[in-house]
Image (tube, rainbow, N blue to C red; front, side, top):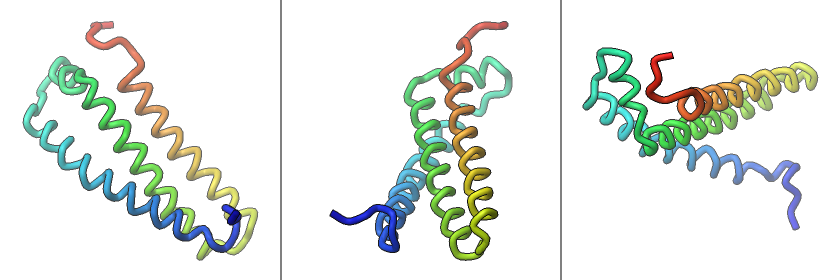
Length: 119
């Protein structure tokens, strides 16, 4: 069995980068068409735009793919250009917290909260 933590992990990260790029290439035009077709002008219009479950799921999937895509790119940049181990780990942690926090925040926004209430 091959080790997942060695110098031969490039294929896996390459596949993640390509898979997330494919998800983004498919999802973003679909979401843009949906948003441009609706063009909400008030708050109730924006609520109606995000009311269908498929829109919320697609938005969360797209954001997750974007976060993974960004993580792979940033990780590779840090590995190539930041030579201090402590600085690299601090940058890793910062990026992970920001990306994971952004995905979690979006999940709370689109799935949490009360849909359709005026409060």
